[in-house]
Image (cartoon, rainbow, N blue to C red; front, side, top):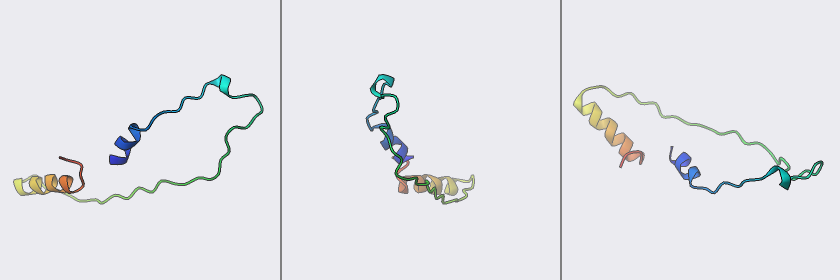
Length: 65
């Protein structure tokens, strides 16, 4: 989630159709990389101590201030 929020701050480059001339390749694909998503699954209960553990876990991961 942190990466998504940081990406939203990057400027957007707009290319208009008139900027591209027909037949002229302006872009070349150099390669592909797959995004690797790692998840840490953890279960939490509904009692007070489990809710406190859940909040502390979010704070440790910098998802909650």
